[in-house]
Image 1 (cartoon, rainbow, N blue to C red):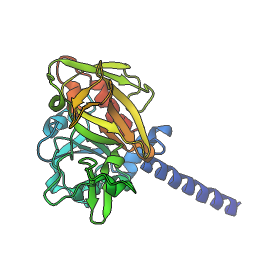
Image 2 (image 1 turned 90 degrees about the horizontal axis):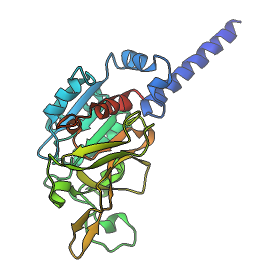
Image 3 (image 1 turned 180 degrees about the horizontal axis):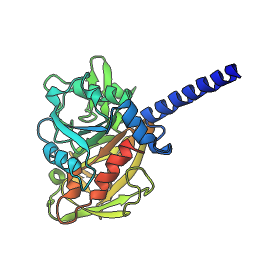
Image 4 (image 1 turned 180 degrees about the vertical axis):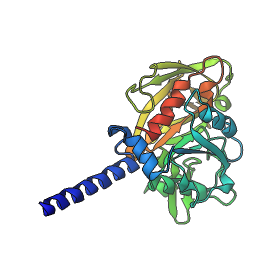
Length: 302
């Protein structure tokens, strides 16, 4: 009887350990277990999950305003703070359960690598707009011929595809998208006029659960194209109304009618890309707080 009891206890400990690993990696949501989220954050994290908003120089978004939005009791009342990317290191980045990067156009390659390592170690990351589309002095962009064997194309892939010494730093594939430009830089647009509608492709997804399938959108956003390689899920698109045509070097570039708006990538969908700053969902004439709520609970509780 004593031996059987010991085996049962060992099995229970192993199952508990497996459960923690599955939740930690995002393969299983903590809400899958009754009171699982409260237990996970209380026992392992010491209380309410913490959110860090990282900013640098220029770009879409306002980190301080987003901090106020997330801390608002009427929205999610999150335990959030903002911090300049210059103060962030591999040591203190792991103290946070969710990191949101916005208002951060200029990001050095070593910081991009730091964010990748943070996710590998179990963190959740939300990347927004044009964050990281300006490299630092000395950073090298990856060329097509350096990624694709047999290619003689000497053009760069994009600002998120960098070189890390002799290795590739493929942050575009990490996010699941490639940056092409900001919409209001590519075409004429107004921040007050409706430019399209956010179309949810899966209203059962953790980031869009229960939301209206079509949401009007005003403001600026990044134009991106999805990367075919890797684990990528298109959660929402922006229905632009007609094909977005942009002048190229020799001919018009057609980005299509449906522009990627929310994209997740990686195992457990622990990385999410939003084409616009998060606080834009609660600004203007038609605030949509539910998108912010689902972002928070979807990334941390589901």
